[in-house]
Image (cartoon, rainbow, N blue to C red; front, side):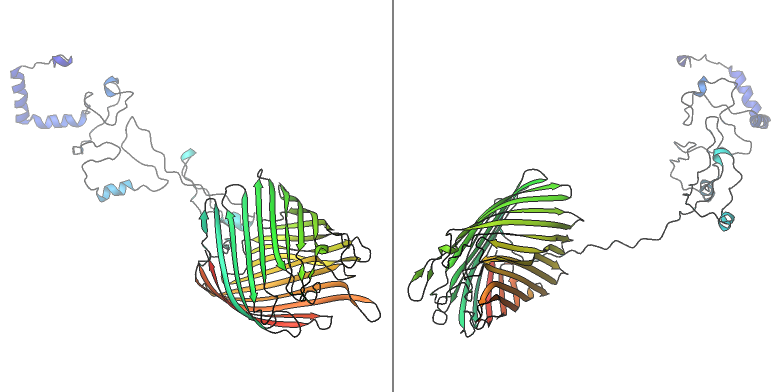
Length: 570
């Protein structure tokens, strides 16, 4: 004891023996009686778990209340190792039912724990306050309102029982957007650097009952080879598209000589993204083809159809101002004809049909809603021929243009494209030719009704040149519809229909010398099917019927074509 700084208390041996004898001869009850009245003072040196670290017991004054008192009726039970007033019990003994009942404290009731000078009373559990909802002031509402609970004061007063908040009617679920599934038989393409190319080749054999499109034409077998190549860039900025299509149609020379001809259509479109709202658009195009065999501009004694080529390009600037978009574009185009070969071996020049065209386009559009963008488009151009007059002595230089009003669609990818209507007109320098024009419609719509049905609609209008005396030109209008139904993903049925008109002003001269307009009406209907073996091989078949009705005698005809072919694509 001296080592710890406390004075040693030495008791004589005889005093210790006397105290022991008193306990043995009956001093026990007296000591027990005194123990019931004498408070048990905790040893200040004993470790306590639930003590105030800022005011330990050994630094407290002796006049303070003791930490704990042992009642006379209590039986001392040694606590488990590590036990404290927080309820932790390291003995891993199961709590009795009585102890569990004391732990279950109802909401709003105060928790009772052993009294301690170092603990403050624990307030009752707070009850969630219900959300206040506006209610109309009425007698029934005030009568049914719950009265405030009594029995508590201050911050610890018992609150009103919780009630669920009142909510309005449940809104119907938002309809899900229709998603068009991808075609598992679509071409895969070939990756070449930043480009994705889609090459294809079609081979077909057909029989046409009237390939010459004459009132009393004879039939002929037809063989066609048609390659094509499409390309798309994969850049983060800018864009480049390539679309090249060609074909060669070969007729039986013994049945219909002079009708075999090539065809080529190529287009390259580019876009340069200067900024997010400023884009430069570039395009170039080429077309190589022939006129139809029944075209009034062709002489009757041709040995073969002459080719003509149309090529040109343009540059435009597209600027976006929030929802408003403005496009300004310039365009140059050249049309040149091949000389005509007659059945008698002579050659006739078609230089008087060659001309250059210069034009400009102004288009403004406004995004009314996402996917719907109405627009107004105006175009003006001038045509200048290589020769001042043609073979008939007419000066065919002209100025023309059109104006259309329409809108573009892109509604959840189910309806895409554009459609417009307006007026087209062309004035010729030679006063004898007059003016040609009329209302027009243009557009291209793709409607995906569902995963099995697709409808396409196209409309075009053009004013072409003419070599007929006193006829300024030809106004052509065409509209076509195509309906595709997927019986299976690999079996597609197709129905096509179309109507077109060709107007030649002052083309008919009567017996009295008066002139009238020639109007040719064209119709066609086709039914076909496509069987997709895999993404690279398809088999096609089609039956098509064509009619032409004209107000000119000996011009009507009809033709039927049966076609069977194969398409190879990648």
